[in-house]
Image (cartoon, rainbow, N blue to C red):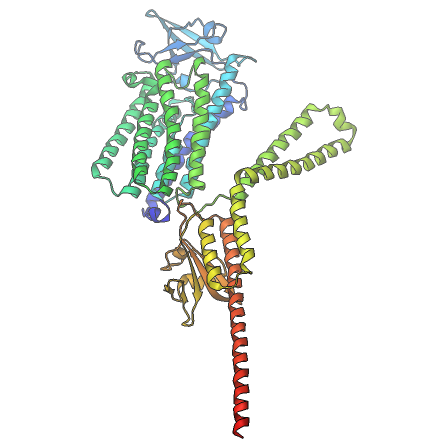
Length: 603
């Protein structure tokens, strides 16, 4: 599932790639625009929040175009217009209930009560301070932000994995998961804009079915190609989802109730649940046939998709019960759960699988820099908020009294930030990177002792064993230069001195990845032993048994250790040569004495 499994890239013509990018920009832009707008509205950033004093939900017993009113606030504008719970109402325009309400606007309603119809006008009022809806708006804001996180994770995978079929399928599916509210942006106030916006929001849910071919590709990487009927069945399901969701969009927009038999408001969540469940089934089947490293990755994806599945199933059941998606006072706990699953658990697991376990070859490695950069950013934002709070809570007279007061606050926060940041980094190092430190310390301990080893064979064997331990059991081979001007290991296997990987090590004097250089060497990493700008030897490391890639800090310490041990091996060889020279000189001296004595006797 690493480089070898992701070698197949998309080879579409340029115009097809441009068309696909344009389509994704439109769909994702539409979704993000609607949800960011809704998040800003729920938080009050766009002015006064309207009081939703009643909701119209689909009801198969209602006349076409009418909705049944529920949760009518007895003190709200809907009740003031004479509407009660259970009444059938139709807005003008009929899709007006999908448009975000704006304080001060008025809309006309047709009331149908017991078959008698009357006209009413409702003036939208602002949300009173302390109203229970304010709490619900906060919950829905959290839910919207959670979905935005999921979409951004999908966009990240699309960006970094472009051309990788499995990565693109997963990225598009993640961008379609979740829901950000049914209301339209304020500028979509006429049929020409509202209908396409609503249709895109609904049909975009169909892209969740792309999780199925993603899972099928993951399965094929473990067990080989699937029979064609699997792909044909998926194509049929994809067409059904697009067609039925198109009908659903019409149904919900015009309140015609064609799909009420299929769950009504919960129908998109139902389709999502089925698609995610099928994808999980393929992933589990692939997990059973995968290696230990591949199972680690697949397990994370299964858990992430299971989090999405639980959330969508509960949303679907709630929608069937209430007639709307995540609506009603009883949905508070569901909103919390939905936000946690879609905004924290599932994206977190997927991000960990992509970044830490290299689910795809995205050319991206997570290390201390990323972790500490994120921590520093969080702390910096936190202190900025503290400074803002101090500026607004401390009386202005204190600020105006002396410039030294404000300077003292700024300096204090600056000094405090660095102290807290250092303390947090220390804690993070001990919590998250303790095993890294211990692993690195053991390697450095062997390198320190290498200078005291007497025989090169012993040092080479000890170093190879330590590298195997350091890498978690990866294959290790140490090659040294021979008299024939090539390189050989302990088993006698040789590598030509002009191999591209060896030439690169001479030129760069650092670690290289042989496969990236067109070398025939089958190794994940090659580490040089340089001596006076010459390649005296090198170490080949195979892939880790866990399937993880070598981190930048690991490559750095491995390169340093290899170079130091290479110098120690060279020193041992020089010492052995010196001892050999001393022995030869002694033998020559003895021979000279013998010859001198023989000459003297002869004379």
